[in-house]
Length: 234
Image (tube, rainbow, N blue to C red; front, side, top):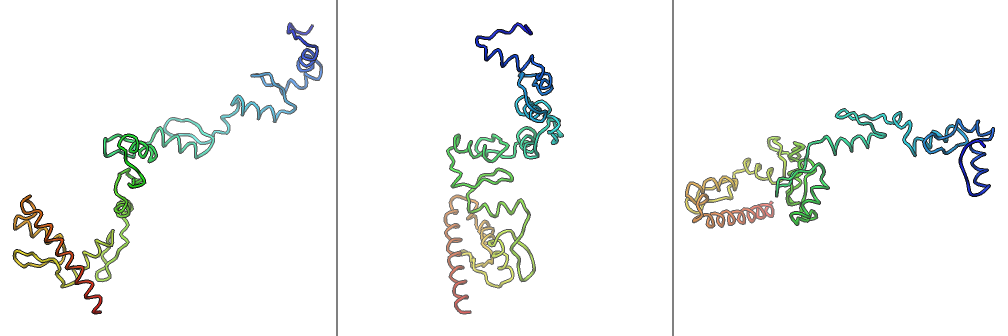
């Protein structure tokens, strides 16, 4: 006998003998997997088997190396994913509890589970992770890009939002729609009226705060009416 292996059937014994002990097996032994003893008809299939099943020779395909920890990867995408998960500092910070996350998906999941915030109603900035109402998201995004798309045709000054441009345009006009009810002083911009009202003690104190807000609101309404009238006249 060639070895001490025993089999219950003659067919199993023959299969073993043909694989390991007959003369032709010597030719096939070159294509025998040393790990699992499986044989292959050609060297290419053996190498493919070793690579897929036992990861032998895998290193030569790992051409993407992490400069942080020297780990090797098969594709550039896998390397980027590795760096993002293990070596990138947390970018997305929860403003409710200050917990940080490396991805927007993880932050969204945290907000929904821990704070019951529906991300469909809120906007999460992909640059800084800040959570805000959707109607102010556009201006916030522009704050990261430093883009100033709204340009004043009078002086060329640029602004981040159309509302900021509208307020600036009033500086080129003699129209002063915001009037103080206490002293009849008029202002082009709402913020200047608010600053002026502080002189009368109406903004900084709770006693007059409501009256000041009512005055500003009334001025805004009058301003809108005046703008509509001027447009109709023109």
